[in-house]
Length: 280
Ligand code: HEM
Ligand code: HEM
Image (cartoon, rainbow, N blue to C red):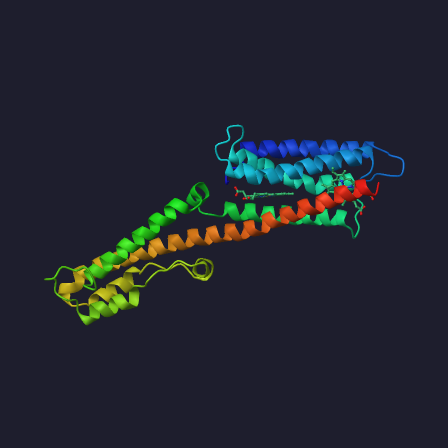
């Protein structure tokens, strides 16, 4: 995505859409129909048709997105087209209607189209801020691996503390050691609330680490150092999981906005087209 709609291919679509817009404006200005410019003139009908074709193409993108194996176009190429055609429509529809709007279903279609487009722009801004690996893999694979790593590290920590799975002849850890662990360790359960609102856990810094180690009995300091190392690794993994989960959640929330509004638009558009022909 990052090199998608503003890449070479992205700029190509920006050019195509800008030139198309200039041509649409030129024809609009050149046209001087009896009764003034509006959606019912030849140019009006033509622009309405083109705008409808544009909207249907953008809706088709939803299906295209899932057909990852299509050879004709690449996903990034299609997204650039999606973005710039969407932006072009903002201007094309007023040219279609002769800049006439009112409190009616026609203008409702335009308003819904603007909502869809602006939600789309918000989505693109959000996408470009996401971690790169999420953009390429959409979370899935890495997330399971990260969760498994957290589980393995937690087991290692418990083993070192003698809480579970430790060898029988290992000496039990002192209360100071266990107290330190209690303060620093945590159980991690991923949740939507957590991924949206909880802050990432910070690594234990060097001065705190030194202070904690100095409190431990001498014979436990080596193990203490290892445990703190593991705890730091666990914190790092948990913040990565949280970052990825939070991005994924925002993407889903965003899609639940962009997608329904685009269907609302399609519905209002169908009524608009039907009504202009019905009352003609
Ligand atoms: C095949 C496609 C389309 C056809 C045949 C069509 C037809 C028309 C016609 C005949 C008018 C004039 C109605 C009148 O003056 O009473 C009109 C106006 C209008 N159309 Fe379309 N249209 C199409 C697509 C679109 C699209 C895609 C949008 C926006 C999403 C749109 C938004 C409007 C608006 C806002 C008006 C002005 C309403 C007003 O003056 O209050 N149209 N259209
Ligand atoms: C009338 C205008 C638009 C319509 C009807 C429309 C419709 C859609 C549809 C149906 C999807 C697929 C959702 C899914 O099933 O996953 C989609 C995805 C998307 N749209 Fe739009 N869209 C419009 C305008 C825009 C604009 C202007 C932008 C950005 C500036 C945009 C950005 C996006 C993005 C980023 C995605 C998701 C891409 C992905 O997940 O790979 N859309 N849009």
